[in-house]
Length: 134
Image 1: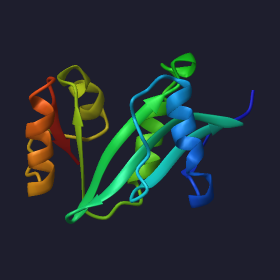
Image 2: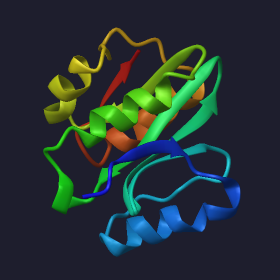
Image 3: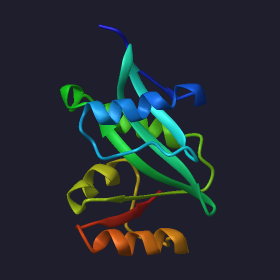
Image 4: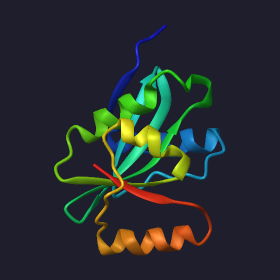
């Protein structure tokens, strides 16, 4: 089996991220104003976006191919992506994922930039969401 690599996706390859999301019927979309990070095992098996925001980054779109879940790919991808980040990294997640993100060093004591706070309030109208940061 081929080793898993974790890397920044080069701009010409960005369409592959949305293709990956669509192939798994995910509603997530890659943002062109973000850094796109992927885990590959020949092909993309996981991805996430890091969007510049205020004095840090907003982590969105974390998705792992269901066929390879439970192998530590998500934590490895998150750590690879945020290891190069200067400043705070914020994310929104379902409250059931709080423990997962706490193991990666994220916490609930969040001071959100105004734009993210407004977005969180909108999201919370339709579903349970919490904000976390590291």
